Amino acid sequence: MDKEQFKQEAEKKVDTFFEQINELEHKKDEATEEAKKAYEEEIDELKAKRDDLKVKLKELDKASEEKWEEAEKAFSSAAESFKEAFSKIASLME
Image (cartoon, rainbow, N blue to C red; front, side):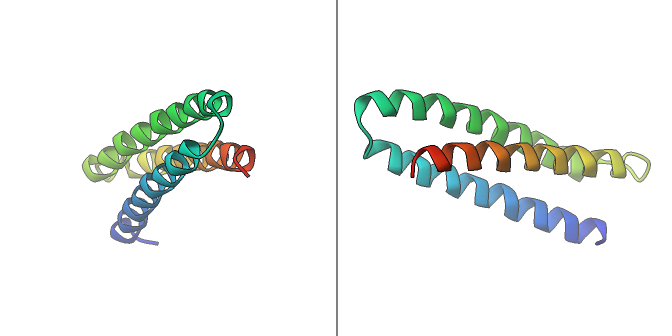
């Protein structure tokens, strides 16, 4: 995959992650008060990971040829971290 394709895919992932957080927030609203507090903490963690992804996405845009591979790996790692955290909270909310 070339740089432009990777950037486009990365942008799609970030957009999807925004949507997933919104879905979780809607589900949280249907939970009991006690569960809401736990979900809020998990969702806050996801939001922090999402914000980290946005930073990594900007780094991809600015990455020079020499730094591209490093920026690509950093984004991929951050995306994987988000996916793991999302899976954890999604399973709690089922």
